[in-house]
Length: 465
Image 1 (cartoon, helix red, strand yellow):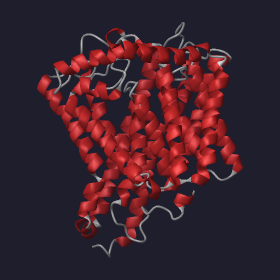
Image 2 (cartoon, helix red, strand yellow):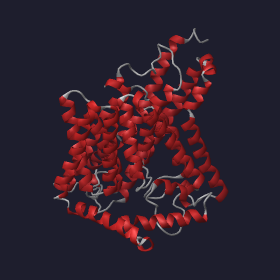
Image 3 (tube, helix red, strand yellow):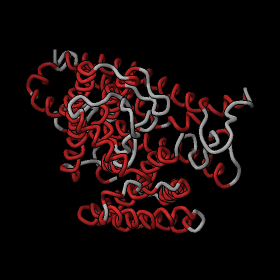
Image 4 (cartoon, helix red, strand yellow):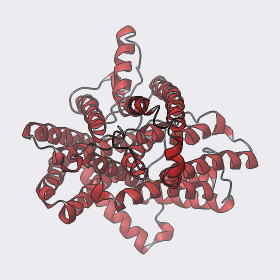
């Protein structure tokens, strides 16, 4: 069977990779899609999105949630198709699978851990019973238990099959270009005139909260920065540098210090990587960091609250160190939320409380803690384990990977750092899984020996991009 059907395998591989690309793309451009949807709605109904003052309206909130659910339904269908084609491919390659089954299993480790994570969510829910928001999403956060269970097997899977570096590069250009449109609208809304497109929530673009917008911006800034570093043509370097500067300006205007720190740390770590492994890119890596610092410095003089946020951060650190018992207001109240989260976890360490199922306190504003509160410590540990396997395996093999995989690794890193101070919410969480899949794609497939004619082989010369 192996030799007889070899001619079909490259075609099947192309189909699989196209499906993965489309599935990943759909969510990467979702903020721009939401912007376009609002333009269309307003064009047909000029009374739409007329909420007064600073804040969101139920109309805009549900418009975005309904759109992301539609995207998820499409991606679910795409993944089912992808898996059906993959099954055919495996059946045509049974001899090879039998020979290299250990490599196949090793490559599937993150998916197996995510499988245990999803099963864990279902099991603990059956043990303690369904909470108010386990099946019907909480109005604002918009995620039920099945969304958390599906993410690894929709967005992560799609990202895993975007194997070729050229495809990742195209995705990143579409992603950052779409972001530039969203960011331009946000800057007009903030600095020129309020726009109904932005739901009356200044500085947040189409997002319902500036923090959420900045989780997205953190990835955009890092991706634009690394595209700027790795592009050889000056025109492309300038374009990506300008895109990064625009996104940085939008982030400083939104004044969310946690994501500023995430971007800063990621860019510094990238400089260290270049210093140790790619000295020819060191100057460019330093240059993009200086762009970020320069834009931050210039905008800081116009955004008074940004300077105060930095000052307040050091005050908060001092309060936590000197008087941890009475520092609940530190980090915009996050210390209090973390203490409450730990208290909730201590009462139900194994099964959790369900999605936002506790009576007092707010969302933990730390994604790992949020999973522990909702679903218990074992589920949180499985989530951390799956993410860690991807990131550690990629870090170990970093010298052998294409530049676009390194870009996706750094984009994932910026999100993960941000998530330690943020919440899992319907229109940001999938970004992690898409980028995590894109990060792991080349690593996972490198564990499985391939034929010389295989389309899944990374293009020669990619590491010199």
